[in-house]
Image 1 (cartoon, rainbow, N blue to C red):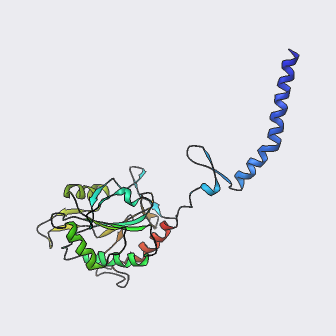
Image 2 (cartoon, rainbow, N blue to C red; image 1 turned 90 degrees about the horizontal axis):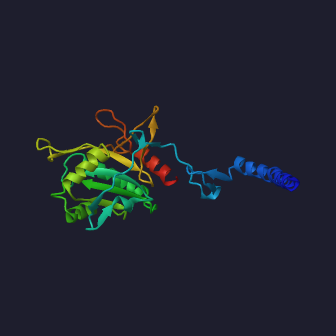
Length: 247
């Protein structure tokens, strides 16, 4: 019985010494940010921790950050492009069509300006989806890309199943798209751009306490405002792309 008591005393002394020597060191590492915990509770070193997030908001749908839905379409070079091809990249999304006589030329001219501003960044791209795939074949998209000066290898102009494209626009991003034979060009669509971070999440800046969600793609930086007095958002989009590239 006495041996058992001595064993307990010995174990208690070991625990006491461990606590006196090691616990202050662990606390000191935590205080100095050398140790962080991920959501699973596993310790990782400071060097392994992700970079600090910017002040751009995560757009939430049903209380969850909105992520780009899975997609698979054909680009201007005849290659199959999926959402996986954009992993690790910051990119801008638009819906357009090559014969659009109104807002598309303005939108794509603005995207060319953005492309040129980030030409040194290999992890920046653009995803353009045609809403008139019947006309906009890979060959037509290639001609359109050359006409506007698309040089970024991560800028894919994509075509494919019209139903899937419309679902991606209207349900995946809430960027309105529809056929309408009564309007010029025969189609209606949003003139806004969506901004996606390296992990595939929809992001935007916050203005007056609320995320703007999308960026107006129709007004150029030089124009400043349109006829209705709306202010251009291309300069803001450029600033926010840079923030995401630095995350």
